[in-house]
Length: 351
Image 1 (spheres, one colour):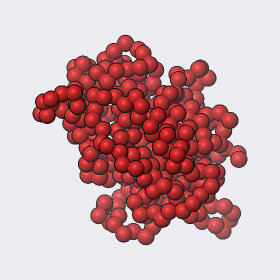
Image 2: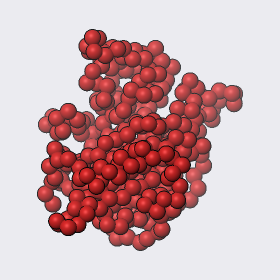
Image 3: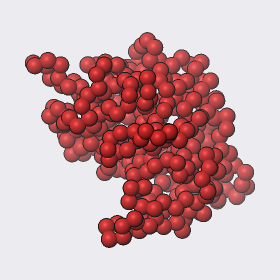
């Protein structure tokens, strides 16, 4: 399959759907027949895109084997993947896996991505272009939780702009509540020039890599972790810089998000195929086959939709502490996830 032009503009039909949902009041989303809701998708049996229950349970057990004990995690129920993925009609290869990740796996994923990986200075963020980033520790691959940007050690960190005449300094509240939009793992994509650097990339986090590769037919070589708040959007684009057409996986954590995805018209008289999907915490989405290079975007984040058991992250009770009034080492950030959606978007760079 030939890669599309990275500089092409999205079709008007897909842009119109994006704009319509961007402007739509959340109350208007109820019972829309043109919206796929992951909570209500019918089950369907598919072929090799479906992880088996044995693979899922084994993968979850491996991933949780080194859970950081500073944070209490809800007891898992049987992994209800819902379990068969749903292929979106008219978008071949676009599969939704409702509730794929259990609560324990979701919280462990947040711990790894936002405490450990965000604090690894080998991973670039949107802030690196304009700011000198100060870290709460020395560079190392295995960052402990008390060396996180959410830790008390980091509370006094101030990011200094590279050009003070253009940008103001940022404190950690400003960074984590609004200014931080993404961080990259593995292959460090250059968003300005739309290329991967030729230099050797830092290692992709081993535990996340193993989980993704156990569940999906791909290699986890590069990823972007997006940080959204209600009111944030992601404009229409296609991921076309990888040197292969292997699948792309997206995992949702936190608040619900609307995902608009579409393919160009096939032929002179055909219309573009487009769908809008409501993705919830724990859902996964696989873009493969013809849908690997589909246009996609996030027109809306729905506030007050984060699962109740996740809302207090990262201030979860410390099980080793007898004082129930203590929310652990991140008490100052209690309720942070209530207003956040975290999206892990993983891709394979090479054939």
